[in-house]
Length: 226
Image 1 (cartoon, one colour):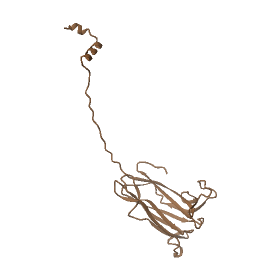
Image 2 (cartoon, one colour):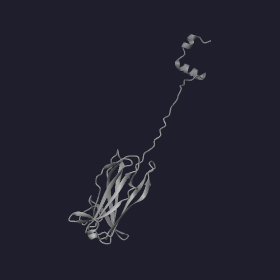
Image 3 (tube, one colour):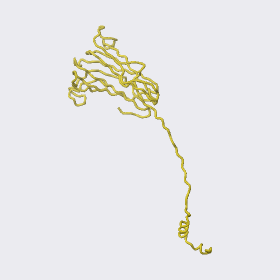
Image 4 (cartoon, helix red, strand yellow):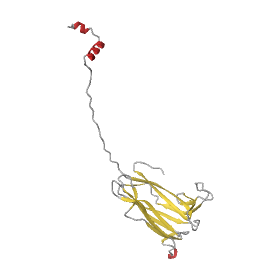
């Protein structure tokens, strides 16, 4: 039998070795819990309103004042507007359109077109309509002649094709879009907007002007530079 005095003389290191030999080991209990989160994302969907089609109206100017229709009651030019590219929000089930098409034919100097349309937030997240951009091009048949540049109030033919409005370029269309941005659209809300086209003397006969207006929207708690 090992005496008590001898056990007391065993060093701590030897005690650990002896315990490991006889199958004794230090251990501890472990456990864990898990957090499982489910996140259902909202949707940001800006569309042209499917319930109110766009309206395309003609005007003429006399002494700085606008009157409905063409001058002297003539029916020369023609304007049509419609929506294309339908879209449906997966969360709300509401539908709308992504593209507004404006078709103006047989335009002439001082022909004025006024287009009214409605933008609709069909998603679940508030949208800030932060701004817009206008681009375009001039064509002769299928041939592109030049780009159109927008200066905030009018469209210019980029005749020297350098991407900026400068000497040698000419303004062909006065174009303006509702300038009350930014404004906020809550889900299911709508807002009426307007575009005006006035064709100038410099607009060339027998050519086609293609104009693209892009409206920018962003979630309400962010800002967007346009």
